[in-house]
Image (cartoon, rainbow, N blue to C red; front, side):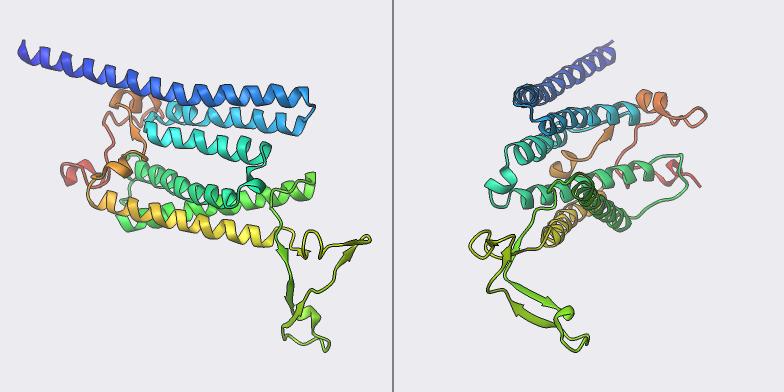
Length: 299
């Protein structure tokens, strides 16, 4: 009887904790969603339909964490989910619509650094879940997990730059922000056609009769510097979380900071319900290295 009462209290505590977590998520998501809807209505009245599209895109992105939780039977930690919502709002609404990318120096750099960090966490979590699943017959070391998470984050960063380039080329946007350069270094300037770099300082530049040295102050590089800078800070964010993830797995799931960012399986029933037929595992997936014994792994 005492054991049943203890189990009942434990289940009640878990249910209460779940309700608190859900309320926190709904609060963050609800407040930001309301702000996006308000921005959407304002943009529609102003006939800024490109901003309406951005608002709709942001609302769609807000549904991604919920869909992932449902399809993968995982629980995204509230901290991670809150960061994702704030990141989407900061990038799409504040950055694109409110022009924070141009008004606030370093806004783009900050977001791309966070992007590299977050996607390394996502890549780490996905591979780690695969690594702990009976549906796979391989075991990945903590170092290999960290390398894969890093590569996943960098791949997402490169694909995003492809997307920005495609939007600029096809729709005439300026997602790859331009930088002003005042010196050109190129072998094309070599008068003999040799593969020797010539350095030419730009002292005067007129375009359509306008003096570009007066404004904007030089030649516009059409996004190359922005792209490389974005990939560099994405690299920094990816390396940072890959190191954190490596020690998280190495220490068998210990570490509050990493645990606040890495999704976990909700319950054995949820995992079994979402697994393909004939592949139900009926167990809770835990961080690599926390299995009780070698018998838990597939041969």
